[in-house]
Image 1 (spheres, helix red, strand yellow):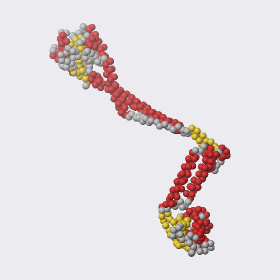
Image 2 (image 1 turned 60 degrees about the vertical axis):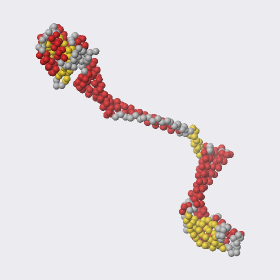
Image 3 (image 1 turned 90 degrees about the vertical axis):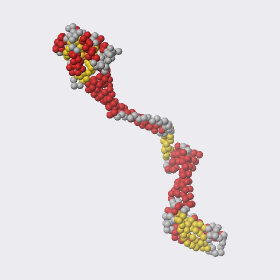
Image 4 (image 1 turned 45 degrees about the vertical axis):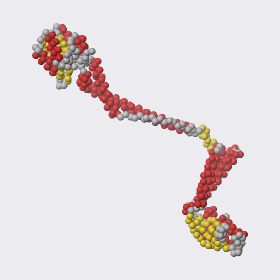
Length: 495
């Protein structure tokens, strides 16, 4: 296959730079497309994120709705409940209500008792000591025992407290005082003749010590009428601060019992039917009508789903995509420009020229656009060349072609500004040294002088660009020469 008479480097660099404005247009178009596609992509990403959030919210609402119980409310009256509840069902409600009353009573006692409100770790007590004198009576005598028993009853069964309340006007503290005052004896040990009265120190018993002592001694004096041989003597008073383990245990027992009572009540209520719950609430609230809400259809428990973490799409940065689009536009411009030159005939082969006109392509120049047109000799484009890289071979080929026609003069016809082609000027000078006169006829057939030069010529060498768009001009020159019997020796291509 014949070699191309124009290089790829020529098209991509020389012609590409010549038509730089086309590349700028493609770069701008690519940058715009990069901008538009990036904006559109980011809009789609925003839309996907919004749709995913809406879908997740909708699923959560559906799950919450499905998890809700379907309930039904029924209104019961006391008369209806008492009529319909019988036997064990009614007894269960009454038993639970009694537990409720007992729990409330225990809670009220725990909350109101001044004794239980005291701090077991900072407990204060006042002790009043008394001695019993009994003459010749022994401690085992029934009169002595009855005397001691009467004193204990006076303190234990609130007689002392009642008199104290009556004297001091302390109606609201009667029960509290009964908890805070106690009397004990030595039992069967050697201290049986001694009685010890304990008064726990609190806001209730504050400043009542002397009153308690005088009332107790007064009661003992009254007993002398019944027991003349026995008397009570006050020995003295003492005070103590200590940890009261019994009080601490008592408090914990009450609290634990309250918790157990509440658990027992809650367990019983869970087993109640709707009408039992209604009647129980009526007893507790003191009402004649109650509304009971019951679950008709329980809500569905959401199944545990396997969560697959989906990677959230990320937006693209506009600037890098604009730059990438501009670079791609320049690349596409180069490719399109290359194929446009290929399809338009820029890449000519030797056979394309010689096949049409029968004119041998002797050699070629490479055209460079720099301060006008300059040129350098290129290697020949046919395989018979002994040294294809020798630029002087074109000179030898032209000289051989001219002498072969037995001519002493030739004319170069073709593109204007041929005088600016340094290689062509040098070629002409070399040929003139060999006795071959060379003249330049430019811009035929536009220039009349060029036609005159052709008519006077003994032979013509065509010098033209290797492009199909120039074939019409070449055709006119060849036709003109044939009509006027002017031999066309060959052609030199400019690429």
